[in-house]
Image (cartoon, rainbow, N blue to C red):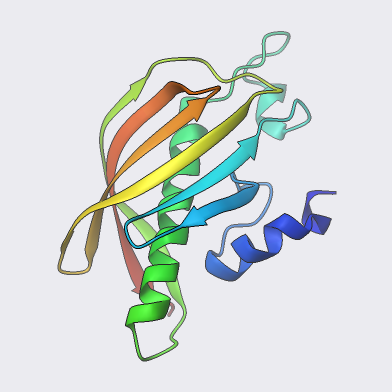
Length: 151
C-alpha cells in the first residue's frame, strides 16, 4: 500500500495532501529557488478506470496538480526557514496560466517535476513548472500559490 512507502514521509511533513490525491512519490531536491520531485505513474490508480478504459492516459489536470504539489513542498520549506511562528499553513492555488501539454504520460512512465519561484507579490508566490519524462518536456505552466494559515 502507498501509505507504507518511507519516501512519502518527508512529503507528508511538508504538505497536507494524501493518497489518492497525492501525485508525487519522492522529493529529489529542494534548494533556495526550486524543488524537484518524481512520480511513477501506476496502472492501478483510480483515474484510469475512466480515463480511458482500454487506453489509459494520465489526465493533464492531474499532471498540473503534481506541479502545484511540488511548488507547495518548495514553499513549505521556504516558509519553514523564514517564519518565526510555526503556524500550520495550507497551500491554496490562486492562478494557472499558459499550461502547455507536449507529450502524453502513460502508466509505467516515470516523470520528474520541477517548480521554480519566479516572484513574490504580497502573500502570492508566482512560480513556473515543468514536467519531463526521459528528458523530454511533457508540460510547462505558470501558476501562483498562497500559503494560508490553517483555520
